[in-house]
Image (cartoon, rainbow, N blue to C red; front, side, top):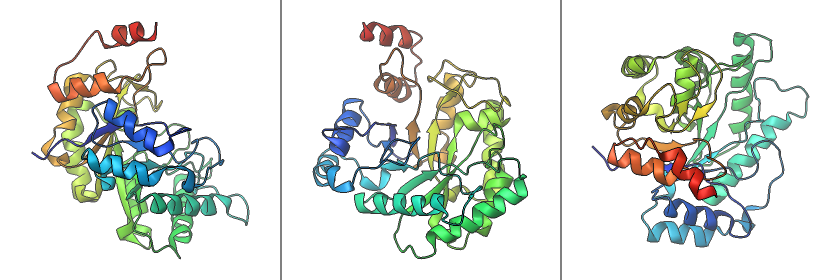
Length: 296
């Protein structure tokens, strides 16, 4: 079994920007982390020249964080399955995000497939492929787009292996695409925790587990098949601690980057305590009370 590569979503904010994110990740006991290059719900972006990348990368190197394991998440407002105007702003925005990731020196950009907005899955997937191909047509960077498995709420695409496979099979630059699994999304899409091993077998048969580079580790607030997509803290949701530990340490996912996106508790980040639980493989039923006490 390879060394566990585990971290969480870390905010990048002034004044230290990416350097501050590295310091936060280290304070949580992480050996990787994930971040957005700007707010996920809007298009406002600070230039990468303000991110203190050189200092951040030096601190990573000093503490054994491999830049190739650090993950960037694309804004979830990008919807390439529904580009409404000829300017194709979502395409150019994704192109800009890829350039930003390349400038920082990261390898992976996690991407939500978006929504077909009522046009139908087949139409949405085709438009998605056309726009992904357009976005990468003149891009020669080494940034890999990781398509995230989704819960299937509303008209969301990427709710099952079949839809993910269609995208991977039909993009032009196949070596530039991979997959990010999400445990909450997989559960909410209808896969029971007890069936996760079979899900991986099916995924391997249809796509290949070599395409999986990142997995978001989240418990779920809702029952399996709810299509709700509401994350819960590790061990406090319907997936449960033991099931999540089995997923994290599943030999089929050995070496895959694991990232927590679980909710804060009373404004306090849970990641240090959750990662301790994961490393020790021992559930702490008092985690939320301890975090609430820290908030006082």
